[in-house]
Image (cartoon, rainbow, N blue to C red; front, side, top):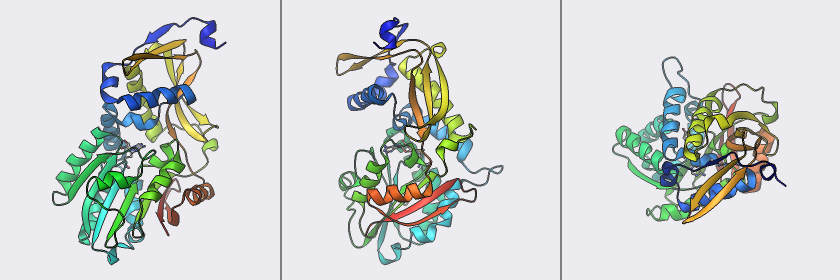
Length: 341
Ligand SMILES: C[S@@+](CC[C@H](N)C(=O)[O-])C[C@H]1O[C@@H](n2cnc3c(N)ncnc32)[C@H](O)[C@@H]1O
């Protein structure tokens, strides 16, 4: 007998109208199944709706270079690796920059400017799970680079390769006179539940001239010293506030816990319930309820840092060929560059 069967449900929550306006039926089904099977709401869903503002504000307040914080690790890594990333573009006429999980596109601003000076960039293609962040990306790119063609579309890179989506926009990925630079920045690789599927989807989207560039944190997850900063502090605080509101969970019934999770070898943020809870979802006209027992925890955020040998192994197993990697000056973040044979 589960704890909630022994003790009565103390509170029944209803997700808000905003929740239903943001998520499709398919997404609500996935959220429900993931909650039921592994007590997690995938972080990818927290970039939609209000989550888009949360990310954009977090980026502008804490990551964007400012006079008192001149260095952004991702921008520096893109700069330092520019020659390797662009080594194949001299042989082709056109270059598409495909930014998967583009966010607000801020990290690629300098990179596009440099690519533009080489006279090669034809299109910037922003792909993201969040329609709302695609709108932010569009506004930024059109303001910064009015002469570059901007294309955007929704993708969940855990479940789809790029090919079909780009074909819908008449972008043929595998041609001899075009190179694609595919970016997956912002340490997003370490947020995914199924990194192998993501790497395989990238591999299946790539042609001979193409390059995949991604970043991640490096180090040992289990040796985390408990310091809470950066995304683990500010992004998590905002996501926690929003998820309570979106799900109708009362502040006094839960707490936020950050910890090392040995099952996924990741640092996670969890909502811990102080009461037996029922959340009543509406899905395709039917009620679907989820029961959570006092003391249970639900993951709402995760980051997996890579040890370098493990990173090399995961890439090898998924298929792209690792051609180069470089860590930043603090040995905390890595940029990884892959091609296919
Ligand atoms: C950590 S932010 C990074 C944004 C940007 N690349 C940067 O470096 O600032 C993660 C981005 O990836 C998107 N994202 C997360 N999971 C995704 C998925 N499975 N498929 C597509 N986009 C995803 C989010 O909506 C968000 O824009």
